[in-house]
Length: 255
Image (cartoon, rainbow, N blue to C red; front, side, top):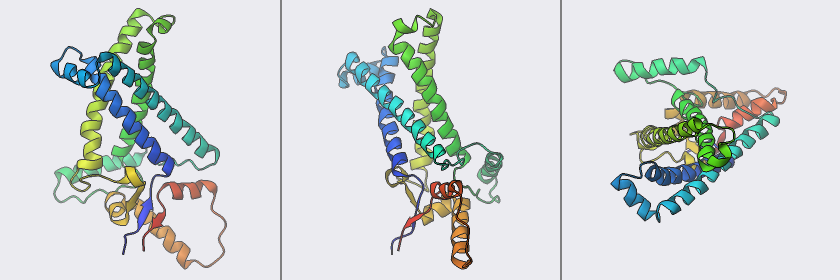
């Protein structure tokens, strides 16, 4: 018997993540050799990419991909908001501070219980908003570096130099964050290795939900039990409540 699965990402979210993944990987692969062009490693990488000119061209194409992905995500969120289906689960809350406290207790106190997370834990929220902030910074500074002559009309020479510095260091920070922080938590951790397949299917199994998002699973199961045992007529759920339920991961399969 196949295990029940729960929908957490819709098809649009899965595709947005894939475009972001490809764009970001190309930006790192082509940007860092240009940023550290003097190193022997960068020169070897640039040669494999077809030279500095080709690396620059691919870097700009990947930048367009990042911009398209960012705009796509904004339009997606706007569409859900207009349909009154926008979930607020990714917004920071006081519960995040409780999760931080419980997580550190669990890490350093063998007697402490394992923390119980809901729809998104504080790590996932941090990563999401870091991507939002990083994308804004990289796109803004990238345009200045891409079109320095046009930017000179409204940015001083110091501003262009600062854009170069910020763009370079933000790129290094983003690359290290994805390589170490995101890859570990999403794919390399012992309880998810060799990968979390959410980015491929948009779903998690009941076992994965119970381990990673027990509060969310408990809420879903409680709602299902309430519907199953309550035969009295019920008013239709509001569009926002229905959207939050759907966006939070309704059951989509399993026998």
